[in-house]
Amino acid sequence: MALTSSLLFTIIIIIAFPVSTTAQQSSNRNITLGSSIVANADASHTWTSPSGEFAFGFRQVAPGAFLLAIWFDQLPDKTLVWSANRDAPVPTGSTVQLSTDGSLVLIHQRSGGIWRADPSQPARVAYAAMLDTGNFVLATNISSILWGSFDQPTDTLLPTQLLNRDVALVSTVSETNYSTGKFRMRLQTDGNLVLNTVAFPSPDPYWSSQTQTLESGVRLLFNQSGSIIFIRQNGTLIRPLFNNSDLVGQFHQRLTLEYDGVLRRYVYPKSANSSMAFAWTARGFVPSNICHDVREAHTGGGACGFNSICKMEADGRPSCGCPPGYSSRGGLAGCAPNFAPHRCDQQSEDAQDFIFEDIYNIDWPEVDIEV
Image 1 (cartoon, one colour):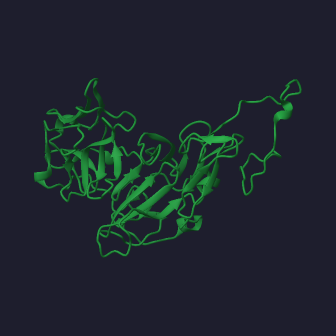
Image 2 (spheres, rainbow, N blue to C red):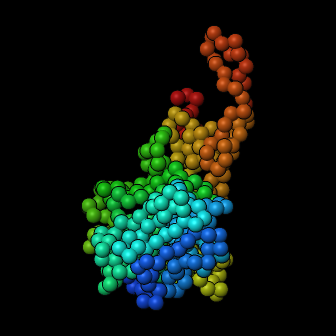
Image 3 (cartoon, one colour):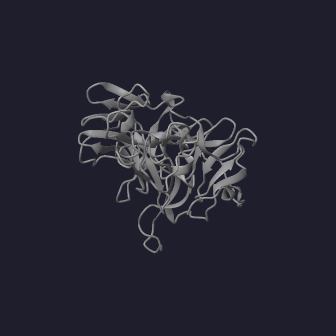
């Protein structure tokens, strides 16, 4: 199921229209100025899209800790696709308020406003709406969008969503910890889509789309048919990132940069008539081998962290382990030694205390003993 580099250059015929800046919304679902939601454990009050597919509100991620988020509301696991405060959950009693002046503000129960949507002209905001696309918007009285969550993605893109140049997706820490993780996807100003670690020790890409030689104005579009394509500013197709059949209307879909550094395109059947199980299934991913591709030269780091052993599983996910004498720090945080550090210079009295232990079928790229 790994995506080969040749697949990226497969040509498909798709008409890719630019995403509309008009809110297609039923008036009885519009959220009026002055409305608010309070964070509490029962999560009974949310703002939902007309079909009920998406919900906007507070999701409890730990006892008494909430994210202001958007999720697939009809799925059993309520899959999150966006959050405003991923690194700063708020306590019970906090609120999100659509003020009478058109501002959307997240108000911490004790410390006050900690996040605010930034519409281009707040004074013109007439209502807010949770759209069936998964985009939460602030709109004018003629339904022109002044601000949308699609413009500030976290780790996920949805059908009809554009990724413009210099906008990034950033992974979560783990499947259950939605804080900022260590991997990033960004469409550079030169038109090259890159995946890289967020910070130290290596900002260099571990995967790229190799589109930097194309003309300027390249954008990435997850279109309505479920294809993820590079397009020009006028909306014409350059080439696909993933080559998939038409899935419009058959599946819930998302493109997520996951906590393990892999960019995966997922589908989830909407109908019981589907031959697929009712679960998210990956229909393509890059890179094909995260254990090999994420490496920091001369440090021993990688997808699983420092001092770790990374093994690819059949589903394309990395399995992390530790060499003898080391213990896992948890998740992708690497491994810590179970022994006190030694010295190996001639003056050291414990220079003879080192041993070598065989570990088979292991390779640390770029840190071979010859180097």
